[in-house]
Image (cartoon, rainbow over all chains, first blue to last red; front, side, top):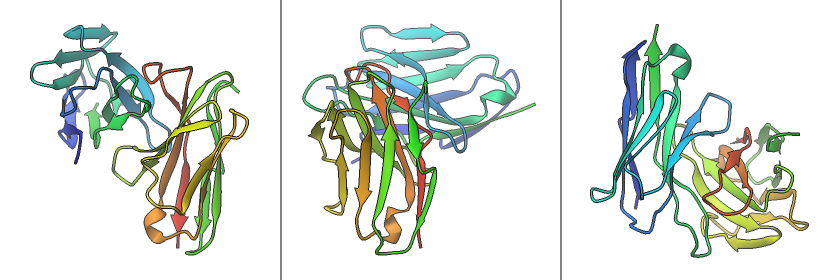
Amino acid sequence: QQQVKQSPQSLIVQKGGIPIINCAYENTAFDYFPWYQQFPGKGPALLIAIRPDVSEKKEGRFTISFNKSAKQFSLHIMDSQPGDSATYFCAASAEGGGSEKLVFGKGTKLTVNP
Amino acid sequence: GAGVSQSPRYKVAKRGQDVALRCDPISGHVSLFWYQQALGQGPEFLTYFQNEAQLDKSGLPSDRFFAERPEGSVSTLKIQRTQQEDSAVYLCASSLNSATDTQYFGPGTRLTVL
């Protein structure tokens, strides 16, 4: 059972475009939702994270929108650049309960053309 | 070092061989995680340590997989009698304390089983 569903699988935009990546979760115990960026041959690196007590969080060109009732959250990248070309993963975790693991989506490969 | 380091970066094993993968977390980080990332997929949780205690090993796929962190710092993931389906990137992550602290990932070890 896939607990975090991510779409689209791949995305191609032009420089300056605003790619949007969507995730949906099932487990209502999740209370922490990070987004990770991964370049080929590297480990994932945290981009931005949100908790369900806010509906939006912005850091630089990256924004998370969160809809608790729909159990959905999304990543928007403003003014995208070729250097943003990478694979993006949404994730979720539940604090406490004895396990602190992250549950990841399957990833979105983003290509930003110059 | 400033980040999580893993060794070896690449490992090729013949089917049936035993392998040991090492993770050096960020100094002072209490929590340590192992994830398995198949090609084109998101990381999947294997096991979690808080200091030297293994609090969750629910993601280990079989009893051929074993992890330890005897002194609460360096961790080793051991895979016995490797199979072709074990081929993947094995990622280690550490965090200062709880799951809602940022998990910092190492570069991973790419295991190929022939």
